[in-house]
Image (tube, rainbow, N blue to C red; front, side):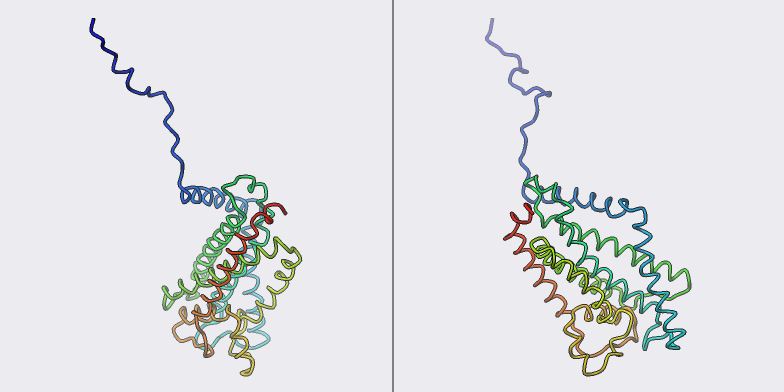
Length: 280
Protein backbone atom coordinates (compact mmCIF):
# COMPACT_ATOMS: atom_id res chain seq x y z
CA UNK A 1 0.00 0.00 0.00
CA UNK A 2 1.19 3.48 -0.74
CA UNK A 3 2.04 5.66 2.22
CA UNK A 4 -0.79 8.17 1.86
CA UNK A 5 -2.38 10.21 4.62
CA UNK A 6 -5.88 11.51 4.76
CA UNK A 7 -6.15 15.21 3.82
CA UNK A 8 -7.99 15.95 7.03
CA UNK A 9 -4.88 15.03 9.03
CA UNK A 10 -3.09 18.12 7.64
CA UNK A 11 -6.00 20.54 8.11
CA UNK A 12 -7.02 22.03 11.44
CA UNK A 13 -10.36 20.89 12.73
CA UNK A 14 -13.15 23.35 12.30
CA UNK A 15 -13.89 22.83 16.01
CA UNK A 16 -10.34 23.74 16.98
CA UNK A 17 -10.28 27.25 18.55
CA UNK A 18 -8.60 29.94 16.50
CA UNK A 19 -5.43 31.49 17.88
CA UNK A 20 -6.34 34.63 19.92
CA UNK A 21 -5.26 37.81 18.21
CA UNK A 22 -4.11 40.51 20.65
CA UNK A 23 -6.03 43.76 20.37
CA UNK A 24 -4.25 47.00 19.67
CA UNK A 25 -4.10 49.70 22.32
CA UNK A 26 -6.46 51.84 20.27
CA UNK A 27 -8.98 49.00 20.03
CA UNK A 28 -8.79 48.38 23.78
CA UNK A 29 -9.37 52.08 24.48
CA UNK A 30 -12.33 52.17 22.11
CA UNK A 31 -13.92 49.09 23.72
CA UNK A 32 -13.40 50.51 27.22
CA UNK A 33 -14.89 53.89 26.35
CA UNK A 34 -17.84 52.32 24.51
CA UNK A 35 -18.73 50.13 27.48
CA UNK A 36 -18.28 52.96 29.99
CA UNK A 37 -20.30 55.38 27.84
CA UNK A 38 -23.24 52.97 27.76
CA UNK A 39 -22.90 52.48 31.52
CA UNK A 40 -22.86 56.22 32.17
CA UNK A 41 -25.85 56.88 29.91
CA UNK A 42 -27.89 54.26 31.74
CA UNK A 43 -26.79 55.49 35.15
CA UNK A 44 -27.39 59.14 34.29
CA UNK A 45 -30.87 58.66 32.87
CA UNK A 46 -32.33 55.77 34.89
CA UNK A 47 -30.65 55.82 38.32
CA UNK A 48 -32.99 58.64 39.35
CA UNK A 49 -36.60 58.49 38.16
CA UNK A 50 -36.66 62.30 38.08
CA UNK A 51 -33.39 62.70 36.15
CA UNK A 52 -34.96 63.82 32.88
CA UNK A 53 -37.47 66.00 34.72
CA UNK A 54 -34.77 67.98 36.52
CA UNK A 55 -32.69 68.43 33.37
CA UNK A 56 -35.70 70.05 31.68
CA UNK A 57 -37.27 71.75 34.71
CA UNK A 58 -34.17 73.70 35.82
CA UNK A 59 -33.87 75.84 32.67
CA UNK A 60 -37.67 76.10 32.39
CA UNK A 61 -37.92 77.44 35.94
CA UNK A 62 -35.09 79.91 35.32
CA UNK A 63 -36.74 81.16 32.13
CA UNK A 64 -40.08 81.59 33.94
CA UNK A 65 -38.52 83.53 36.81
CA UNK A 66 -36.54 85.80 34.53
CA UNK A 67 -39.60 86.48 32.35
CA UNK A 68 -41.50 87.54 35.45
CA UNK A 69 -38.63 89.75 36.62
CA UNK A 70 -38.19 91.50 33.29
CA UNK A 71 -41.90 91.84 32.47
CA UNK A 72 -43.18 92.96 35.88
CA UNK A 73 -40.19 94.50 37.63
CA UNK A 74 -38.04 95.85 34.82
CA UNK A 75 -40.86 96.52 32.34
CA UNK A 76 -39.03 95.06 29.34
CA UNK A 77 -38.92 91.70 27.59
CA UNK A 78 -36.46 92.61 24.84
CA UNK A 79 -32.70 92.69 24.49
CA UNK A 80 -31.05 94.99 22.01
CA UNK A 81 -30.83 92.98 18.79
CA UNK A 82 -32.67 89.89 20.05
CA UNK A 83 -35.90 88.75 21.68
CA UNK A 84 -35.43 87.99 25.35
CA UNK A 85 -36.69 84.38 25.46
CA UNK A 86 -34.42 83.01 22.67
CA UNK A 87 -31.55 85.12 24.03
CA UNK A 88 -32.02 83.61 27.49
CA UNK A 89 -32.39 80.04 26.20
CA UNK A 90 -29.15 80.26 24.24
CA UNK A 91 -27.29 81.67 27.25
CA UNK A 92 -28.71 79.12 29.70
CA UNK A 93 -28.00 76.13 27.50
CA UNK A 94 -24.47 77.33 26.78
CA UNK A 95 -23.73 77.83 30.47
CA UNK A 96 -25.33 74.51 31.45
CA UNK A 97 -23.19 72.46 29.10
CA UNK A 98 -20.09 74.21 30.45
CA UNK A 99 -21.15 73.70 34.07
CA UNK A 100 -22.20 70.06 33.59
CA UNK A 101 -18.89 69.13 31.94
CA UNK A 102 -16.97 70.92 34.67
CA UNK A 103 -18.91 69.64 37.70
CA UNK A 104 -19.93 66.04 36.98
CA UNK A 105 -16.34 64.73 36.55
CA UNK A 106 -15.68 65.66 40.21
CA UNK A 107 -17.37 62.45 41.39
CA UNK A 108 -16.38 60.24 38.46
CA UNK A 109 -13.28 58.71 40.04
CA UNK A 110 -14.98 57.68 43.30
CA UNK A 111 -18.05 56.40 41.47
CA UNK A 112 -15.97 54.10 39.25
CA UNK A 113 -13.34 52.87 41.72
CA UNK A 114 -14.46 49.28 41.33
CA UNK A 115 -13.55 49.37 37.64
CA UNK A 116 -9.94 50.35 38.28
CA UNK A 117 -9.10 46.74 39.23
CA UNK A 118 -9.03 46.15 35.47
CA UNK A 119 -5.67 47.30 34.18
CA UNK A 120 -7.22 48.53 30.92
CA UNK A 121 -9.23 51.19 32.77
CA UNK A 122 -7.61 54.35 34.14
CA UNK A 123 -9.24 57.10 36.25
CA UNK A 124 -9.04 59.53 33.34
CA UNK A 125 -11.26 57.22 31.27
CA UNK A 126 -14.17 57.68 33.68
CA UNK A 127 -13.69 61.46 33.61
CA UNK A 128 -13.55 61.79 29.82
CA UNK A 129 -16.57 59.52 29.38
CA UNK A 130 -18.60 61.63 31.80
CA UNK A 131 -17.70 64.79 29.91
CA UNK A 132 -18.85 63.18 26.68
CA UNK A 133 -22.11 61.85 28.14
CA UNK A 134 -22.98 65.17 29.77
CA UNK A 135 -22.24 67.03 26.56
CA UNK A 136 -24.47 64.74 24.53
CA UNK A 137 -27.33 64.99 27.04
CA UNK A 138 -27.11 68.79 27.16
CA UNK A 139 -27.01 68.96 23.37
CA UNK A 140 -30.21 66.91 23.26
CA UNK A 141 -31.86 69.17 25.85
CA UNK A 142 -30.88 72.25 23.81
CA UNK A 143 -32.49 70.78 20.68
CA UNK A 144 -35.54 69.88 22.77
CA UNK A 145 -35.87 73.47 23.99
CA UNK A 146 -35.58 74.77 20.43
CA UNK A 147 -38.44 72.45 19.46
CA UNK A 148 -40.58 73.43 22.47
CA UNK A 149 -40.00 77.14 21.85
CA UNK A 150 -40.91 76.74 18.18
CA UNK A 151 -44.18 75.04 19.19
CA UNK A 152 -45.04 78.18 21.19
CA UNK A 153 -44.32 80.39 18.17
CA UNK A 154 -40.97 81.59 19.51
CA UNK A 155 -38.50 82.11 16.66
CA UNK A 156 -35.43 80.00 17.46
CA UNK A 157 -33.91 80.06 13.99
CA UNK A 158 -30.14 80.47 14.12
CA UNK A 159 -28.69 83.11 11.82
CA UNK A 160 -25.34 81.32 11.50
CA UNK A 161 -25.86 77.69 12.47
CA UNK A 162 -22.26 76.61 11.85
CA UNK A 163 -20.97 79.39 14.06
CA UNK A 164 -23.42 78.43 16.81
CA UNK A 165 -22.24 74.82 16.58
CA UNK A 166 -18.58 75.83 16.83
CA UNK A 167 -19.27 78.06 19.84
CA UNK A 168 -21.29 75.26 21.46
CA UNK A 169 -18.36 72.87 20.98
CA UNK A 170 -16.02 75.49 22.42
CA UNK A 171 -18.05 75.73 25.64
CA UNK A 172 -18.20 71.93 25.75
CA UNK A 173 -14.41 71.78 25.39
CA UNK A 174 -13.88 74.50 28.00
CA UNK A 175 -16.03 72.71 30.58
CA UNK A 176 -14.41 69.35 29.78
CA UNK A 177 -10.89 70.76 30.09
CA UNK A 178 -11.62 72.26 33.50
CA UNK A 179 -13.50 69.10 34.50
CA UNK A 180 -10.48 66.91 33.73
CA UNK A 181 -8.21 69.25 35.68
CA UNK A 182 -10.51 69.64 38.68
CA UNK A 183 -11.20 65.90 38.84
CA UNK A 184 -7.53 65.28 39.66
CA UNK A 185 -7.48 68.04 42.28
CA UNK A 186 -10.71 66.75 43.82
CA UNK A 187 -9.34 63.20 43.86
CA UNK A 188 -6.24 64.33 45.74
CA UNK A 189 -7.79 67.02 47.95
CA UNK A 190 -11.58 66.47 48.30
CA UNK A 191 -12.11 69.82 50.04
CA UNK A 192 -11.20 71.62 46.82
CA UNK A 193 -14.15 70.01 45.07
CA UNK A 194 -16.54 71.65 47.54
CA UNK A 195 -15.04 75.06 46.78
CA UNK A 196 -15.42 74.47 43.04
CA UNK A 197 -19.10 73.68 43.52
CA UNK A 198 -19.60 76.89 45.50
CA UNK A 199 -18.16 79.12 42.78
CA UNK A 200 -20.58 77.82 40.14
CA UNK A 201 -23.33 80.25 41.22
CA UNK A 202 -21.15 83.40 41.09
CA UNK A 203 -20.02 82.25 37.64
CA UNK A 204 -23.68 82.01 36.62
CA UNK A 205 -24.24 85.65 37.56
CA UNK A 206 -20.93 87.04 36.28
CA UNK A 207 -21.01 85.26 32.91
CA UNK A 208 -23.84 87.29 31.42
CA UNK A 209 -26.27 84.35 31.42
CA UNK A 210 -29.37 86.19 32.61
CA UNK A 211 -28.28 89.83 32.27
CA UNK A 212 -26.51 91.28 29.22
CA UNK A 213 -22.86 92.07 29.79
CA UNK A 214 -23.58 95.56 28.47
CA UNK A 215 -25.43 96.16 31.75
CA UNK A 216 -22.16 95.91 33.66
CA UNK A 217 -20.39 99.22 34.39
CA UNK A 218 -17.95 100.19 31.68
CA UNK A 219 -15.05 100.09 34.15
CA UNK A 220 -15.96 96.49 35.10
CA UNK A 221 -16.26 95.20 31.53
CA UNK A 222 -12.50 95.10 31.13
CA UNK A 223 -12.23 92.72 34.09
CA UNK A 224 -15.19 90.48 33.34
CA UNK A 225 -13.57 89.69 29.98
CA UNK A 226 -11.03 87.65 31.94
CA UNK A 227 -13.87 85.14 32.30
CA UNK A 228 -13.69 82.80 29.26
CA UNK A 229 -17.34 81.76 29.65
CA UNK A 230 -18.46 85.25 28.63
CA UNK A 231 -16.53 84.98 25.37
CA UNK A 232 -18.21 81.66 24.53
CA UNK A 233 -21.75 82.73 25.43
CA UNK A 234 -21.59 86.11 23.74
CA UNK A 235 -20.02 84.67 20.59
CA UNK A 236 -22.77 82.04 20.41
CA UNK A 237 -25.44 84.72 20.82
CA UNK A 238 -23.88 86.85 18.11
CA UNK A 239 -23.86 83.83 15.81
CA UNK A 240 -27.44 83.00 16.72
CA UNK A 241 -28.99 86.47 16.38
CA UNK A 242 -28.23 88.56 13.31
CA UNK A 243 -28.55 91.98 14.94
CA UNK A 244 -27.20 91.20 18.39
CA UNK A 245 -24.04 93.01 19.43
CA UNK A 246 -21.92 92.58 22.52
CA UNK A 247 -19.08 94.46 24.18
CA UNK A 248 -15.74 94.78 22.44
CA UNK A 249 -13.06 92.19 23.11
CA UNK A 250 -15.00 88.96 22.56
CA UNK A 251 -12.44 86.46 21.27
CA UNK A 252 -13.00 82.70 20.88
CA UNK A 253 -9.25 82.11 20.68
CA UNK A 254 -9.15 83.04 24.36
CA UNK A 255 -11.72 80.29 25.11
CA UNK A 256 -9.64 77.68 23.31
CA UNK A 257 -6.49 78.77 25.15
CA UNK A 258 -8.29 78.01 28.39
CA UNK A 259 -9.78 74.76 27.09
CA UNK A 260 -6.57 73.31 25.64
CA UNK A 261 -4.35 74.48 28.50
CA UNK A 262 -6.62 73.07 31.20
CA UNK A 263 -7.11 69.81 29.28
CA UNK A 264 -3.37 69.36 28.73
CA UNK A 265 -2.54 70.12 32.35
CA UNK A 266 -5.34 67.86 33.56
CA UNK A 267 -4.20 64.92 31.41
CA UNK A 268 -0.61 65.36 32.57
CA UNK A 269 -1.74 65.33 36.21
CA UNK A 270 -3.87 62.25 35.60
CA UNK A 271 -0.84 60.42 34.22
CA UNK A 272 1.34 61.60 37.11
CA UNK A 273 -1.10 60.78 39.91
CA UNK A 274 -2.95 57.79 38.41
CA UNK A 275 -1.66 55.30 41.06
CA UNK A 276 -2.77 57.58 43.90
CA UNK A 277 -6.15 58.20 42.34
CA UNK A 278 -6.77 54.45 42.06
CA UNK A 279 -5.89 53.85 45.70
CA UNK A 280 -7.86 56.67 47.33
